[in-house]
Length: 194
Image (cartoon, rainbow, N blue to C red):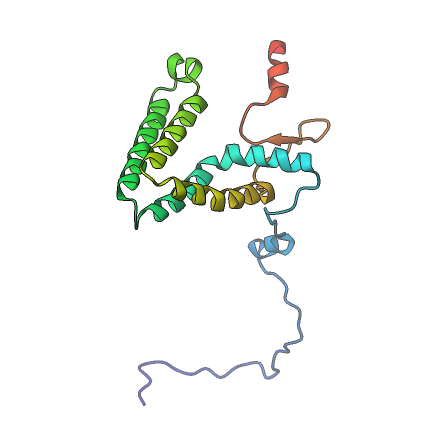
């Protein structure tokens, strides 16, 4: 066989290294993982009040994903038999998306944000979608989809305790939990002191 210019080296140390040696990290990037802790974002709340607070918080934070989950299930159930209902569902989804894009495009509009509440409009669009599905004889599909998906959504909302939802604020004297995003009440009370 040809070596193609490679040579074999003979080891200079005659004593073989033992495999019983303990591993010592060599760099700071290896030492960093010694104290790594696994955080599971799913746990059972201790009280019913904590469960209710967690459901409300998760519906607020993950509501879009829950809605998309239910919508996909409804969409799949409508595909084989109810073509007209499927088209109406897509049209109502398009109208809802346009409304939400309008809200985002005009953030300073008093009419869109203060006078007309977003929750009222979205509730009316959901009711109109449900009525359209019932009138096109797809009400049973809607009922079965809601009956199957809502328990899954509520179980997830109860059990999900996101790891990045709260942080311990070091500057506060009590070390209380403070939401990462949102309205901070302690700053609102001290706004006159500035």
